[in-house]
Length: 296
Image (cartoon, rainbow, N blue to C red; front, side, top):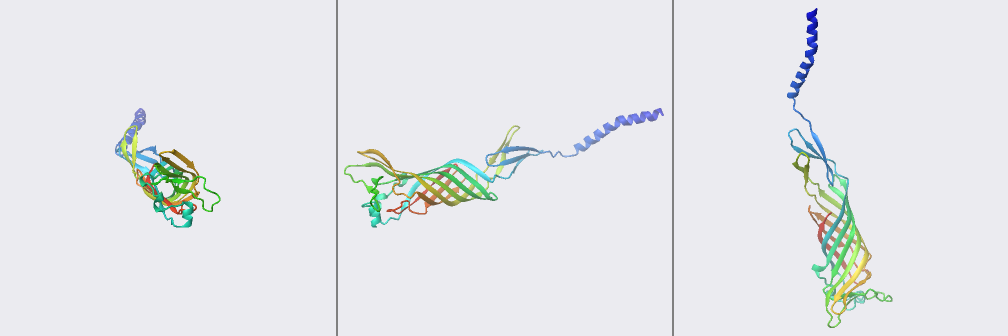
């Protein structure tokens, strides 16, 4: 009887040790598949970085945002116009007395277009490849004339087509600058096609994980509406010095344009072509712009 008690007691004491050894033996034969997930939040989207047991990282991109917003962008380009004016017509001569074809020729290299975009948004339509893109900004156009062109800020109101544009032919007077500035508050709306960016892990340390994303490439096309909020004629000559006059100079208050852009990753190329004449009467000039886009 005493022997049986000793055997039972020994069994009770040894059993936990055996179970622990058995568990350890199974653990040694099993591969640890634990994964550590680190969340890295980027400006455009959220990414899951997975570190496997062998230390090899990979990126599982989460779903991109359906609406992305960009703040502040700038365009630097050139402004010009296609002149369809028939200068022999009575309307053209009444608006610009004595005008001929070369009168309003521009200095192409000094006729500048600058667009300042306050914000731009892109809305996902189809799998982040087809998007709706719209912006709000200021379109600033400076048309530099080759000739001493001046615009009358106070034309006669009793004329059906008041004289606005004339050429300064004062003997001995020379001009350093003669320009027309036309500034618009502009809203372009475009259909955008984008090649989505690819993302990969390029560096992993104990405290830091760095992700490199390829630049997005794409193309956009649409239409813009601009409202003329400021127009100026500025000139600098030899005896009168510098003068600036503000008026609308019979410019159309609204500018509707076809617009397009090509996103090349680090920068873009843009262009616009108006749908109609920039003047309300007299002259027939269709403005256009082309240049480089930064920040959008």
